[in-house]
Length: 236
Ligand SMILES: *Cc1c(COP(=O)(O)O)cnc(C)c1O
Image 1 (cartoon, rainbow, N blue to C red):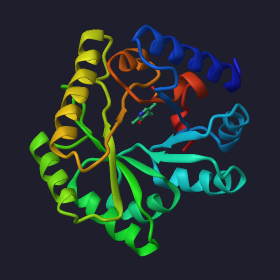
Image 2: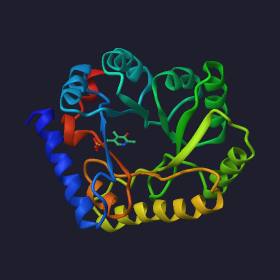
Image 3: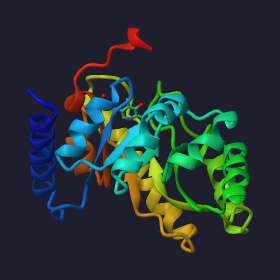
């Protein structure tokens, strides 16, 4: 199957999941996660009208996407992997959104680098929702502290737009669903507490679990393998 065929199939499955959940058509955006895949694969996806991409590693994103964005200015790139502070400078130049904000220090660095180039960037707060998942804020308390600092106006170049999570790596559908429910419920609480921000985004769901995520309220699914095929980690 080609990338174009895969995209068509995934779009159908997203539509069906929206229907089944009683949600409006096109209420879920599909992100193509192109990490470990060559830029040619990105162009194939673009040719099939896929403009939203996610990358994990700043170096790789910066090797691939500046040219892509020049050729297709409608391209939207989000960083979705754990981000080291020394990579923020590059990340904020190429990305429209950092989905993996997991600590206040990272937000401070994002603010610093964005203010230098006079850019406001969207961010999602990554929440730790599964037993074994390691990424995300260490606790809800620390996340709330961070949101309070945002509310105090400490990060004028940062625009919080929602929340992101990764479900645990398990075949147990109950655990996966529980993780998505945890994110949705937390987001509902925090959206009320911090209603000065518009935070509708719930980034959850990957190749193996995006239909469950859509049932539980996802607004953005991050799909890699089901679009581009298996990743070859030996190449990089
Ligand atoms: C790699 C990755 C994905 C995509 O995973 P697939 O299972 O290949 O669809 C989604 N989200 C994050 C944060 C990732 O690192």
